[in-house]
Length: 437
Image (tube, rainbow, N blue to C red; front, side):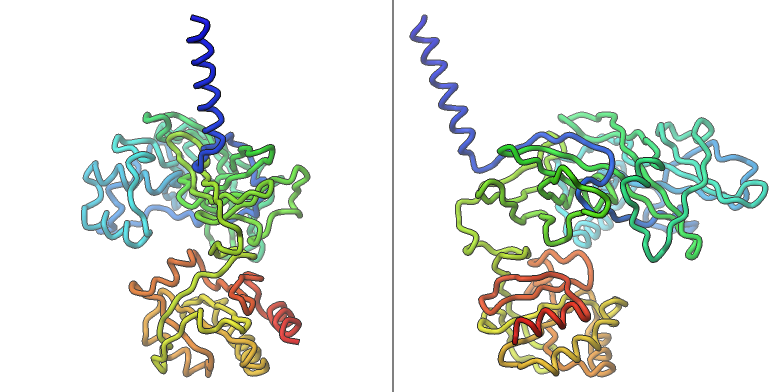
């Protein structure tokens, strides 16, 4: 009996040791209020459209309790997880198969039955707004998710500056509403709570919102913070992670160069791990230990090799490959012809391109989500001289680089290693000038 016990202990010890050497690591998450080490962002909030043919009409919530004294009252909802909402409404017959397939393609999304429930969940938060008897803007949020607004608090949403509408932790902590909803956890519908912040911009008469919540976990004594989709929802489809700093304040948020996106790498105690995302069903962050040295890894992060790509120049159809540009500093400029900030940057890029030694520096623009006609007009209107490569379904450059917004830029050294991201204007000019000189 004693020998058997010792054998079992030996087996367990071996198992535990082997677990520490596993390449796939699952780390349990704990939710916290606020934005932690991340810079906050917000998403737009709109009422239900009145169009009878709107493809989302059957998914709209039916809510009672809007004050009958309000004028111009409107109803809408905020999704905690748009993917769960679409998934369950497809099985409910509220979204057609054609629409379901369209959304998967548009969102680059493959439904995951492990993290999503066919059984309907309360994944939306209803709200209503209108003007009271003296014309003041008022709002109600269905915080307890019972589809009855009569038992919820009426409030005036806080006003924010449209030029600086990113809320800080102190604002979020004092103005959030604790809302109740359901998520798919341990293979069943589970009631959870989260702090919801809603703001208003009078200048544009629009609402913005986010969920002021992040999660934390630990690996080898290092605390890691996890953010879901820029705080705009809690789907964790594109979770970002960053190493925590215990002294983080509103003015010490991690910049984009420190935040590790999905499928990027985080370095902890001289080891490199790949961010594989969050398993919501198990409520864990999933990392993969990487055994290759950093110099052999490709990523969109500063300090890593950039992804190679090939395509044709839009005007000349001359083949362009990033590998052929080794030996030069290269600015990769991801933009779209409808992007206002991108267009504003064109004169700066024109000046930079004409003033730099072409044998040492090159600009390659990658154009996404734009028509050939609009690109042709932009090139002529702004006298764009540097190569333009269209990202399409064949070369998939935009997807390879995980571009989620425009403009996005990467500055590469002559070895193809990313040395800076999202530099523009004078900052970009100074950086390139110092490098070339």
